[in-house]
Amino acid sequence: MPAYLDTTPCPTPAWLPEGHSQTIFASQFSSHHHASFQRERVDTPDGDFIDFDWTAPGLGPDTVVGPGAFARLAAAAGTTTASRNGLVLFHGLEGSSASHYAQAISQYFRARGWTVVVPHFRGCSGEPNRLPRAYHSGDSADVGFMLDAVRQRLPQMHWHAAGISLGGNALLKHLGEAGGTAGWLAAAAGVSAPVDLTAGGRALGTGLVNRRIYTHMFLRTLKSKTLQKAQRFPGTIDVLRVANARDLYEFDDAYTAPTHGFRGVNDYWTRASSKPLLMDIAVPTLVLNARNDPFLPGRYLPTPEQASGHVVLHQPAQGGHAGFPTGSFPSNLNWLPRRLAEFFRTGR
Image (cartoon, rainbow, N blue to C red; front, side, top):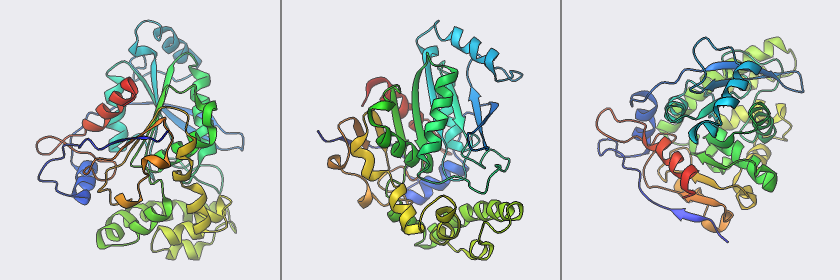
């Protein structure tokens, strides 16, 4: 049975007419509510750590996240239907709980009684991680670790998962690999996920705006972090190639691929893409991509025949990358969390 295809539009403003303006305006100028988080650090089996940012009606600004806080959340989870729901939200490339989409989504669900947790990929929480490795677009093993950690803390919750951009691809890849064993999740969503990393990487390396704005923005922090890492772990990173990388292809070939066990960038982009695994997803899953997303052209988006019957492919014509701004000037970011909530509630 093929996936269900939804082309219902996202009502973007007329003064944001195409993908670049919708992407940039949403990230820099659109209004949204702000969420506050309490942090928990969890050690990984390989000697590293992952920081989890939690927000919930039962967590105040002075709450220390730990067994006591989770016990109170567990007790509250039996009081209302909303308080039994939880959302694990995976951020995008060089993102965090402070990213515009994470703030808008987290506050929306928290205001409705949900517990929300944003796990940070290694090195993205504001402090360098402990190992030469970092994170990558197909990091499904770390996604599985993060999900298991959340489930262990609040096992009685009705957990949902959503990933944005890189986090969406990693989540979708994990769901495809896990198949029916991920059935403890009530539902999941991948938003603006670059499900075809080769196509997405080439798109980001082509065109004035893609190279001068998006690629420059990503490389600025990626190269800085990696060169700092090279000082802490001499001889593990090709410093010259990283410093001279002009796009994500060259950066991933110099650092991401070899550091994380891939033969090179082409091997990495091929093996880390979630698109071939969409057929194996067994959890109700929304895959939301605007067809004008400058990070992944619409012609590379999955078709219903390329995903399982548990998947809804929502492909509005407008929305940009991780943006979906709506409303009057300066626009707002309400549409995306509402779309996620609708899917979690109805499966469509």
